[in-house]
Image (cartoon, rainbow, N blue to C red; front, top):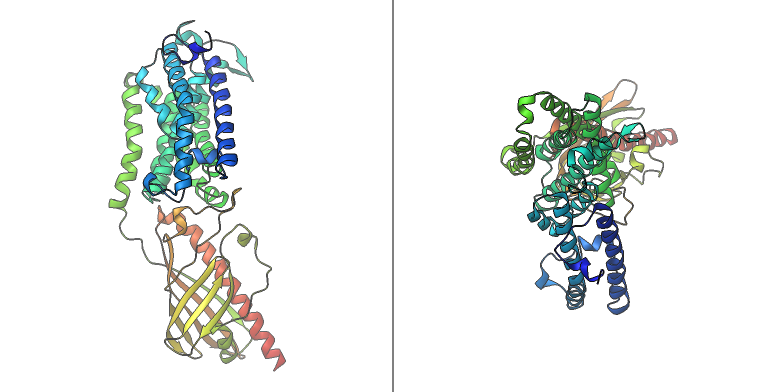
Length: 462
């Protein structure tokens, strides 16, 4: 009879029982699904399949017959677990004296994980008042238990909201604008501080730490859920950490104003509404990205005629490369030429594919200018998974034109200048230009140094 009451909507469930019931049910369900998929349908089924069951298709009616049968079977098997989850969530909400309609969050991907974590920490409103439970003086690692709970709740909840915002913005909108890199970290920092200081005033240091932690957890979540690679997360980290800390400072100032404290729920609601608003306005406010240019030069101890032959095409560059290109960023390997003069096609092979470059100006041995009709991916994501393809790898970093300019110097030397014109649709452009200019400069130098070594070697032989 006690087991049957697990599926009852009446009564209450404490946070400890809620945690153990949820974990045990998940372990049973995930292993049951894996056995069904593996031994009956001969398909792989892992944890990520609960969010992306059939990644090649997003429309159920387009699924292959075997995938459709597997999906229907798992849906039927999940019905008692769904009933159990809803019943226990309703009982837990009643125990916390929270609105029962919040149980709809049980069905929202990603948010349901955060929601489960929050309910596992939220104190019971029946055994003691919420204020007494959050204000107890018991110490844990030098901090009050109430502080630890409040901090964990604020960090986990806002990190989950951040993952949801980033996934929706990038995977469905393809949006890498101000809303993602400025609005989200700023709002998360402010929101986490408001949650943390809900029951008591907090110090500036505490507010900043709690505001920064969700960004760290957000990055880890995007990596583990296979949405981003390590390098992209690290490149975005400086902006995210600074802006989330700024949000924490703003949250600290808000809690200092007693008259604002009375309107805390309304302010938190506005912060939550601000994130999708940022994302929605981005495509309408960004406009076309500016055309950027990077120039790099090198002096070569060889005449322009010798250097020219190594410019139009060059043999394979030795495998030794800078540490930058060990991170997955694309690097040049070789260049080949089909034809001669204007209209010829140059192919510059990179580690991720080839740039196709039709020649526009052939002024031997002074200037070689070419357009770019095909761009490979700018990098291979460094990730624990076999292969991921975030939207920003296609069409966000685009090379449009390039050229090599040769100038004869005294002593039969040549100055070789390589130039690339490109656009970068990831915003804020001023920040990301620091990265892209640096990377393109090192790509130039890898090619220029190889041309220098080949040209000078040929001159010595002559």
